[in-house]
Length: 220
Image (cartoon, rainbow, N blue to C red):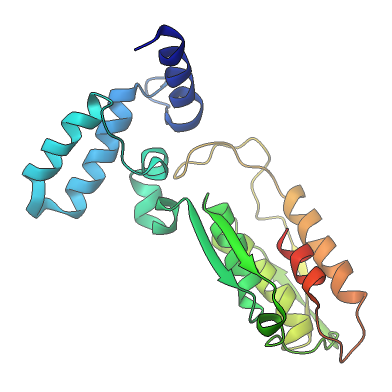
């Protein structure tokens, strides 16, 4: 292999796929990443152990590769959330759950395509501004963050009960993420996201429907 290609390959693995090992105070080697990935498949499909072991000989030799998302998140992260296996997904915007599902998939590391064509968004209910408020404690997980989007959308498109978000349960920026790896972003990005969505929803009149640009802006 050309030396420059090998350097780029090693750097990409180190930055994007090698999980930090706190007990060893370093990141994984390529072989350790492959072993983590292989063991996940062996655990899930023990009846085809021989075939898996045979296929992974070529993965160790860098002749073939599995899903790179599975290389990145193999182990507990995928066992808890199988969506992490996938690079891409798609959904039409047909109800308010689609917005929270998008948040969940994005936080899972999965790209999301979506349709805001008229025949899809026409299925959304009309805006009905909230008439009451309630305290809502946001759970510190990707499920918790996506659920916060859902209850906000529902308050304008469903039960008319506006959530007063409590962010105190979200860990500080820079905290280590044990299951998925990486560092926590803190509560600020979620606050910005929810505030922008709320501002858009409050700009609409009761009885209006979200148009394609509105839905696109919420998604992005």
